[in-house]
Length: 264
Length: 292
Image (cartoon, each protein chain N blue to C red):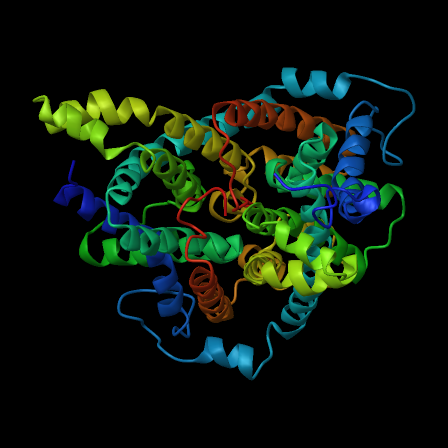
């Protein structure tokens, strides 16, 4: 059954609905006043000047980048190690159970995890430190890494490992020279996915920030809710462009990443 | 399939060590805090200290009997149901159209639909503030052409629902699309060849076959929108606070931890039940989480 013109029009309409807000952010970022009309009453670059000259978001951006880099690397390490066992030993019931546990941060609402962490950290006097924040981010990112790496491992024929082992390579050499290089596209995609997830995470982060510090999304959230500034438009525009670039890159490396929506 | 000692993991007894760091960190960051919160939810609240001595079920009782909390829970459920229904109506035609496009175009459209999900939720909330605000784009345009007062989208149910539909529509489209692409084209061809009209083919062949996708999408969007926190805070304001916002304020502003914990558990039970239904209906799992 062919598809008709009204469906095409509807689909393009929905795409405009989904992507239009980003065009509006871009548009608003060139306004010097918080009033955004058509045409712009007060066009200018003050919002960008706030960022590049006034260094408005420099501290929160720096914290976000550090957390994202550390958490992504750690999640890649832990996630890949875990995926090897989760995929190869999945015929054990315990392993399947642990597999579900690893994906828990995707199924439990993040607000609940945030509140639970706040209460526990407070009662057990766990210091809210950079490393605490990074460790929590690792757990939020693990499902993304495990998903991508596991999907790749499913298609990986273990007999090349057997060949390496039979030819006298040790297990570590086999791991680093055979298994890991074969997983490279999954590791790159999983890493990028993890990075942008950590970089944008707000809901858990807001509960466990080190005192006096904030990540970029929390900075934006607080500015939105408590003291509005037009510079939000510029930082949002810059970050969105960056994220869209990363997502596009991922789709180039892994063309089927979104095609099935599930198993990637 | 392959012999003994075949690979790096399977036949090595100590290979489970590779799994332990990940399991431990998930236990410390998710399992332990959630269990601790469950314990606290059975403690009486106290004005000095985090909670009083002994155990009680009063937190749960007061949440169910108190008119105010019940209003918030009902409001959250109503918002969740409306958002899923709107997403279904808006998203179904898109998923249907997508599943009929050539593979290359499908990939491009899916990329465009999914890409916004990776930007921070605060950025998307801000965009809708610019669009819906009192002095936002829509109101500026309307009031300059028509002699009307600005429409108060923000701080109203409309603002929250528009924002949530925007954030979660992609999940609905993907859920239905995943089912529709796997419906073999010759099912529909058979119906058409046998003389059924296009509409009848859709109603009696395509639509029934896509029911699992519809149910999965509705449950997913329902759960995600009930857990939304940033969108109601930014677009809804205090009047339109949903359960997550109340949990937040009872823990952070009024320091009533036992009550907040009990609230969180009632909420977790509702979403857990819905997610159980979801996993029962479908084996589909999403790569994209929904922290909104």
